[in-house]
Length: 379
Image (cartoon, rainbow, N blue to C red):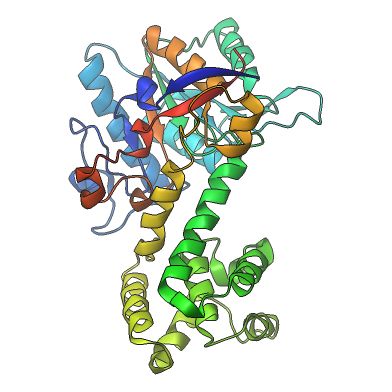
């Protein structure tokens, strides 16, 4: 592992990036609202990454980007670089189907405890997934595509996943992304509870409920989990009561939990009532990221972990302390860009956690893909 200097994701992708709200930062590309009627997405609804509607939106954005860059050339194949077989793999297949394209996907997750390997498997429809336990296998993936008649060059669209792929590679550096998110939850809850905040109570609740066994309550949604930790910190319920209600089948969903809080809202302080009512209204409106204060803090804690070293730190130290750019992804993406491939970045991170608020933007804060970070990996 080596350090390859400081750079940004925008070095590779420019502003060809969309976050969870599917609003492209490149103003030359169509917005979600402009595409709704064409792709059949209902007003006000934002499809999630694994849905077919999401794929249809992304296809239209890729076609628009291709028309800007190379109007005389058509996209013929899709390549996706990601870190999760289920979420990224599903999105990859859906986008191939929606675009009518052939394609291959590279799914990486570093595991140095195992011998290096890259397995190939076919999805329904015959699309190939290349599952690798080394990010350095991207070079082998590129060679394989070349040798099998599908070089990553002109007429190829390359989607690069940002979270835990281009930034904070899974199995290598992803723990710093997770740490920044937990810090944001902690800061938000502590700020709202003030003197009533108890670190031990918070951490016990967060760690216990942030498990697969409790997805029936949290829906694996960090906004929901942060809100639950806030309510537990207020003393309205104890963790033991919540767990007992889940185990007994009395508490079956987050919607039920927040409705129960609404019925007992007079227990809360005026400040907590205000934040509860805001979150409650957003949940009723279908907003998947209703705890805005938490997500704004997540933006700050995330960028606070990027590019902080003044130089001289080892690769190992940077991987432990900071969110770094994955050099292997950066290097291959730049190579594909030089060959004429269309590059596009996707992130499932909420926009509020990825972009500065207007007030922060005035102070000089930048979107995450334009924030300087150290590039670490192998060439």
